[in-house]
Length: 196
Length: 196
Length: 239
Image 1 (cartoon, rainbow over the protein chains, first blue to last red):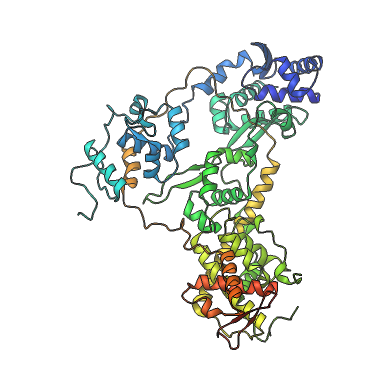
Image 2 (cartoon, chains in turn orange, brown, red; image 1 turned 90 degrees about the vertical axis):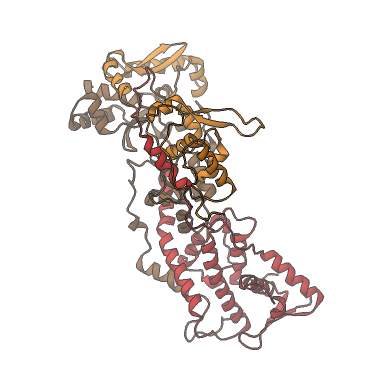
């Protein structure tokens, strides 16, 4: 296998989309003729007895699995995704579910860690969505989605197990506490141990 | 090339993450022994003269491009230049890899420096992830990720040399103690420093 | 004009990842006695503006005890005083603790080295991270709403005893101590160390002593201490 074929094999493998001949020439810094010969060599390497093939498709070249293997590779797709909710995601979801709508800085303050990447991933996964900015401006706020309700078996938004034992103190904590009581998540009269 | 090897080649090609042996067995409906033999066949097919290789990494098997092709394939997309892991980051990663799950204050205490910014950057780069809080509450703990295992060529979580290999030898530990304890008072019978 | 003394040992402080990295490397390096470490630079690197990460407060405290003890010994050497028989038990205990922490830290310093090498060896291969195309996979397993409550409860519970590790107890500036001493010497030929440090915290006092030692090393002052633990007269060399 020529060095050029090796390079092109690696490039076709990594590229998420077909690579045009001219793109390949630019990357490997070779003439179209040389790249064509390397592609032919690669086609022979990935012959019908192998699992992959080189295909000329959609204006370029791509490496793909052979058609006869579809039944097997489809089983990879049919596997339930391991889309587990990580501890970080769970904690963020809990904060949003109980206090929505709530902004990233507010979630961060309560959790004590930066939540930017967690929130982005929960948005991507459809478990959180944007809930607009407060009327007086400020940071974007977030709420949980219908998908979240389905996933956690909730009948409707806010259908959450009640909390008890609110212990945090301080101005921010007082706001959170009132919010939880108003939403019915925290029994009335629960307060910091040291009542004033 | 056997039919099983073809199937496994196709599966490793499609999967965005390494596939565990047991997962492969489930999908192709074969015994671990048969899958192992097919993997060996596949390793031979993707020999050093080819552009790809089969790697046992991060708890499974993966098809990946060979190390020597990095300069060419990186032209395909601009890789972030900060792929370099700083010494501070390495030391933090080492602590987490051996002691996970571990909290920021614990890492700080062990390293003797604050690690807040290092941990945030490692989270951003996907080399660390949150691992939940201890059952009795307290600081968020962290662990290393699959990406960490891939980046450092570990076959699975905890695939590290025993920590004892890195401990100080008896005489070294004694030396540390002696230097620190004795700093500040002169040993018996020694006079003032010889003048320079 | 600097004398080629051991205090000038070239040590690139920027290359170290923290106090433990530095101390351990120095202690295990045969040719360097801890007493010959440029204390001034160590402390500046630790607490000064160039420090990349704040030192953990416990560590800084333990280290200051050690540095102060070493400064004391250096002072005795410079003044030609004989060594004191026994340091006080608290100091000894703090140093024992520091030694234990250095020993605990050591394996990770070396593991980081191993990891770094490993990272270099494994930097080449690239993975195909193309998401699986085709129909959406079956939904992930259902979660229990009770887990949300469990995740929320610790967040509204009173936090454990607050950690002060993010606070640096006191910012101590060696350059400032040096400047203060130099300006005192500009007004008077000789300055009393006790007068100079009256009302200061022990840590600030230690820094002031280091400043005096540094000036002595540069040849800008001479130090005289008539009796052990007595006052130190800092006299400008009149340049």
